[in-house]
Length: 379
Image 1 (cartoon, rainbow, N blue to C red):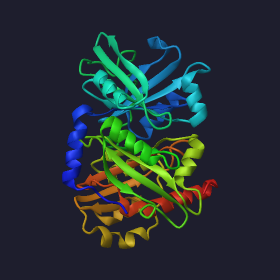
Image 2 (image 1 turned 45 degrees about the horizontal axis):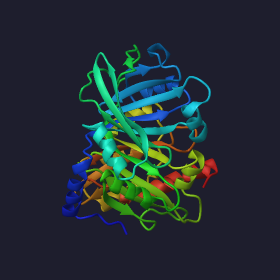
Image 3 (image 1 turned 90 degrees about the vertical axis):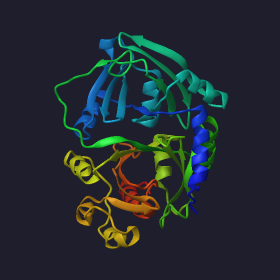
Image 4 (image 1 turned 180 degrees about the vertical axis):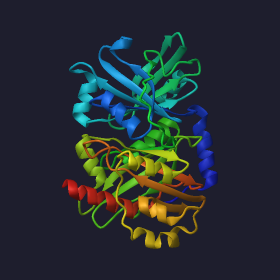
């Protein structure tokens, strides 16, 4: 059964976690994509991200091009190869478009590298300094599940648009934002019997604490099931749920992901808003597609979650899910995959006090995903 740790124990564990690896927040998320220019246009037009910086041939970069976009505290980097061969091409051929880097904002990138590698992390990038006329940035990095990496970013001595090697990107085309604020959590899918291995990695190597766990009794339908544990850093700004498949009658969404991504990787990015109704309305108007939730879900939802501030009708019209825990409630909605392969998607979430992840919605959500899998012929 899912068990929340007591607040006292969690706070103690989080305080211990904070000692050796303080993380200020998510610095950026970098996706390797087949066409960064067109991907940037999609995230601007459909999602309201604003242009920030660019790196490519014009900045002296010969092998790849990158566009940096931002909305409030959410920063995306979209990178494509400029030549044949090389790591970026290989990654895209293997996985399709997907998240390569989850960059973490830290005060001391060298210390972060030293602390994590001393605890068993495999080095991805030794500490090094990048400089330009705007100051300097220190970067280091470690490997995590699949080919996903964490880069530690120290930017306290930098005043430029993004980092050295990039120039300001200021096109005329700037569609308005849609109210996205920050990354609430990022979910990783791993293979059979690998969840505990990677949860132990985050606990031992990065000092994270387990917030909550779900087993196949909590997350299952008639056909499929999965297991999940949520790991969080000391100040709670970084939350990484880790999923693995569980035995079911048919192929679960986690198995489908691993089959098409060819291994472990980032399944979805949950982005927070202060007004989910307005945000989802705008996203739908701009062409973002969401999972369908049957209207019958709303017949009994208030019996389960109790009184909420919002009118139920607009939530029903948009298919927004509702759940409650001991500290409040949350509103959430999931997109269909935003890529051709049925891999990465986004979650829109608004928290009204709740710290949980929508356990009460799991059955409705997974049945919605199964309907999509059935249409794809992958269930």
